[in-house]
Image (cartoon, rainbow, N blue to C red):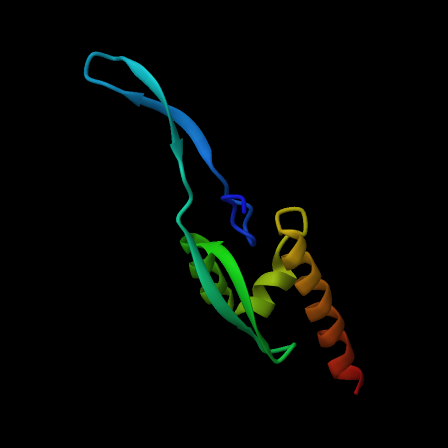
Length: 98
């Protein structure tokens, strides 16, 4: 499992530790990933995702998982999230017609 957010694409960054003597050693900046269960209202089911804490705040700000997925760019999303986005879009397109 890669250290990458499934919704925002936020991943590991690299940089340097810089000592007082200005010695530089390589280090990794890891994203703050959390396992969460989000509710999709359109699909009427729970979805388990591994997302960053920042993405969790964004999902809440946009009004839920469905709203976040509809507005999100598909290039940033993981394969599972892209599939969810398609399912949500299809379900939302069916609702007004019915």
